[in-house]
Image (cartoon, rainbow, N blue to C red; front, top):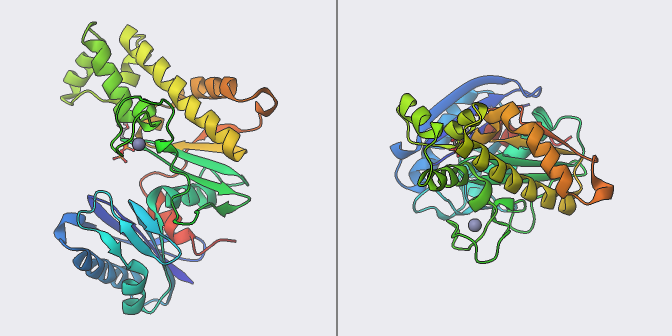
Length: 311
Ligand code: ADP
Ligand code: ZN
């Protein structure tokens, strides 16, 4: 029972061969830009699968894709970060070429399933997974099942509108959670505060030779830098606000938090737990835990492959 998991990203495509225990036996990797059209990308993915499988019999291929995906039919409806990806029938094209079942799921939902089956969600029954990265991604597992919805985008929590007429979001709306609580939002808040006050954030970024980002904000927070403290307090409040909404919506026993911002570790988690609990209705306080994600860069392909290990 071998399965190949693929993480189709805007910059790279990663594939791995799994045995039935979920162990990785081999890997393949390529730059997405090496192929131009969707057809070409699919052709290259088919080659990657053949190469990584080394002739072993496959019981399935699980594929995590960015953007809008119809998982029922295995079609990428619109690929964000994948130019000219509209209505691409991945399941059909790849299934016919390889003669195996192909399951396609959006990357946040794949990551949620990966954490649930193999990561920090293990042992939970009802899990909310949130990644605080450049944007905010999320996925929901309820009663042991990945929640997909009619067109498989359930869990798009980053675009819940938390402030009508708030700042513009990349999605075209205003006031989405992502605009207040993503890594990008943390950076933007820091840049705004620094217009009127100098901060160690700028010095840290300069010392690294990097543009200011959430990472430097959390590092300056450790030194009790005034701007960093303000920015982090504000960010944690907004992160908690969205998590509390998710608690009220899904009643999870566990919230798994991943993404680059979660690397802030102790600078983030104790405050995030406290703030979230405060914003949850009294009877539901203490009914869930908030834990850091367990899987790193492989989470998407692990989750996609694990779609074939539902039990
Ligand atoms: P992507 O969105 O490309 O998947 P990541 O999940 O790595 O990328 O998230 C990037 C965000 O994480 C950036 O805003 C970055 O500043 C932030 N980040 C990276 N490392 C840390 C850290 N140690 N502490 C806090 N934020 C971090
Ligand atoms: Zn939005």
